[in-house]
Structure formats: structure tokens, C-alpha cells
Length: 512
Image (cartoon, rainbow, N blue to C red; front, side, top):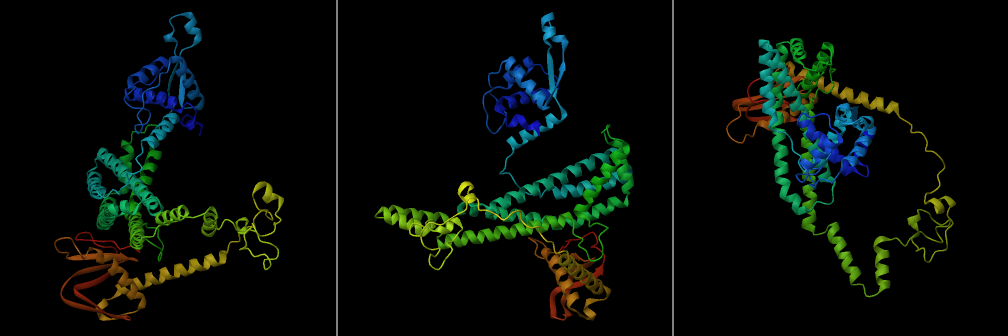
């Protein structure tokens, strides 16, 4: 961690200017710099911007001797590497004084870029990358075509682009939900500012959730198309064009295989999932997080609306209290008001009571109660004495195993009900309780695409526990008999079959 010492040192501004000079020279393909060269680079960039684009300042007047001391310290911290350059010596004395040139060390450059990234970060820019989904679909189809034709360079470029796009989408989503959590928990935001942005925030999250649900089956189908062309050939072609010469061919092949598995788990359920266990993908988890975020924003909106309707908030309460203090006729009245509001005149703030609480109750002010004997530890350190180290936490492993077995039994029963539901036509029999629950879950997953903005939806699909429900148009009304009663569907017909949804049409994967 000493690589980051320059960011907290006393001369941190000077260190940032020196490192910024090395970064500017690096962009101009100049790697080695002498103290005089650093001073020249600082002079060139002076007045345009400071070490942080967020706070422009003029360049500090640094002499070469001062810069030399800064360079030596950065070398001791490991940020810069130093080498001897005898060609700069014009006399024997200069040769003996040793002219040093400096350059970024590999770890030092990463540390500097990390600090600059923090300084340049815009914490108010947080959004979900909704438009990246069609780009991912197009790149997956391009990757399938390139692998089918054996174009190794195109496979490598497309895989790199896909990996970068998914990494960016995951980072943006994490940043967005972190900022949203701060918004929901904060007490500094005003109702006016929240109400001014809540429509755009809710619309943004709903559009992202809808697009993710709409593209997830298509992306899964595109991945299946790529796997049909041969994953081993895909990885071999990508590794053959990888330009990381310091890695061996097996290492590059293992790295690209790990990246492909990471990309696949975003939209395709793992094949190693046991029967009855959850088969949700990363896209399903992201969609669930978006729906939870929408619920949190709506809850905050309800609290803000109730506060505005009632006219009572923490700010208004404190303003009224300040008015009461101002209007107090005497100092004694102000003290009485203070004691009634905050209750700091009671002995309970010490978290201790008199031995006989009936004679001297805890509600009596300490001005009237006799002195209370306290321990020396509390008087000297302000901490109450403890009996010793806390006892070891006892884990109830038997209860954990029992709850886990109950959860697995419920998942297994749901999977068996799904298999039974897809075994025969649902219109020729009466569905039991388990089959009815699975059918309702499938309908809930498929019904999100029933209300289009414009046009007509011919059919939708939803997946759950290894079976697929297809909802298609029907000239009349259909009725499904269940143990809970009759389920009437107007102009819709249901079909349940094993396996995942077929590609084509309007599809929606329904997760739990």
C-alpha cells in the first residue's frame, strides 16, 4: 500500500503534478525523464488544468532541485523506477554526481491511474446500460458466423468486445444500485428534488427490466447457436490470436475459456444445476434486483408523499422546536422545555439505576436524586466494566440443515409438479395444488409482454422448473380446471411442454 503514499503525503499536490508530467510524457511516447525534463513538462501543462480535472489550479513553481527530491521519494515508494544516464554529464564532476532518469514502474502506473480515476469520478453519473443489449445480440450472432467460417481474428475481436461490454454493464449496474441505495437511505434529499426525478428514475428502471426480459431468451438462443459451431474451436481461435506473448498458449486458452463461461452464465442457466435447485442466470438476478429497486423507490415515494400531505417532517419539527425556544419567557422555561424534549436530565443516560428503584425511581432528575456510586472504569475511561470476553457464538447446525432440507424438498416438489403439469394436456384434467401453483408462476412470467405499447402480441412464453408455457391467440374463451376453481382465459390458449422456449416470436423468460 506504500504505492499510494503520494496521495496522502504533505506534498501530495506536488507529487500529483510530477506524476502527471510522467503521464503526459508517456502519452507522447517519452518514457524516461530527468528532473529538468519533468520541470519542462510541468511548465508546458501549467495553467491548463491541475492534477485533477475537477479542480483546475495553476502549476506550482518547482525547481529541478525540488523535483529531484520528489523523484527520489517516489522511487523509494516504488512508484518510479530509476536508472543511471551518463550521457547527460558534460564534465567529470557532473559524471561523478550521477544523473538519474526515471520512469513509471508497472505497479506505480496502476496506482497513479487509480488515484486519477477517483479524482475524475463523477459520482452523480449512474445509469443502467439498456442500449448494450441489442449490441450484445448482434455481436453474438457475428461471433457464431465468424466461428462457423473459421475467421480467427474476427472471433478474437468479437470476444474481446463482448467481454468488455459485459464487464461495463455489470460495473454500471453495481454503481447504479449503490447510488440508488444511498438515495433511499439518505435524509439529505428534499422531497422537491426527489419528486422532480422520480418519474425519470422509475421509467429508466422499468425500461431496463423490460428490455432485459425481452432480450434474455434471444441472447440465450444466440449462445446456443455459438455452441453449436464448436466451443473448443472458438477458444482455440481466440487463444491463437491473443497478443499476450508473456502467457503460454495453455494459459491463454484457459483464460478465454473462463471468460466464455462467465459470458455464458449471464444468460444460460448452468448445466451442473441439480434437479429441484434454482436455475436462475445472472440476467435473472439483475432483473430481480431491478424490480426490488423499483419497489424501494415506490416505498420512498410513499413516505415522501405522506410527509408532504401531513406537513410534519424532521425539518419542520426542529423549526417548531426552535420557535418554542425563542418564545420561552424565561431561562427556566427554556431549561424545562429542553429537559422535556431531550430528557438529558435523567440519570438513565448513564445506563445505571439506584439499588432501590422503588424509593429513587429512574425518572427522577439527577439534580434531586442522591449521588450514585459508579465503577472506577466508568469514571476514568467512560466505558462500563465488562465481565470479560464475550461468549462464543453457538451455531445451530441441526436447524440450518433442517431448514435446508425443507427448502430442497419444496424445490423438488415444485419440479415434480412442473413435470406432471407438462406430462398431459392441461385442458383434459383437473390440476392439483402443486400444478396450479406452477401454472400461475408461468402465467406471471409470460404476462409481462401481454400489454404492448403499440401493435399486437401473437404469443408469449414463460419458463419455470424445466417446463415452458406458451400463450397463443385463440378464437374463443378457454377454461382450465384447478383445485382452486376455474381459470378463464379470453382469446388465449395455454400449452405446457418440457424444455426451454423455442427461438422466434416474442419471448420472455420468467424467473422465480
